[in-house]
Length: 186
Image (cartoon, rainbow, N blue to C red):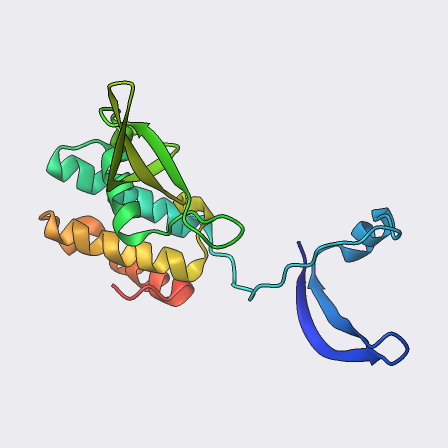
């Protein structure tokens, strides 16, 4: 993966094709280019660059989850899955469509810690067994700064609603750091 700045394209007047131009800002393009088979075609995917967020924000999210779980006497995975479903991001396929999973209806998926699912109202019966359709939620470790900000702000509000005081949730220094570094307004 390379971070690039798009430059004005050129047109090859012989073939009529557009020649895309870019300046590589990050990534080892030369090494990739040297190893690439120049006789083959490649697929190029361009998306807007978003600054990667620090793992500190993800750590803080998990601290909040633990505090809420303790306060409401629930498990960390259950609270985490609820927060991800309410304030997180849905997993999508290469076409931008949501990813779904079908699981036995009585499976306690809210206790899973590595796969995050949220139930839909859709179910189906197969050979006398009821199955539920779940939306797959992305894990918080994959979130960019904006997505993590939304997740932390929502989880922070849920912590307050659970009866935790602001002093129990975050220190003034942490609050300022989240604002300065991640733009999280608590």
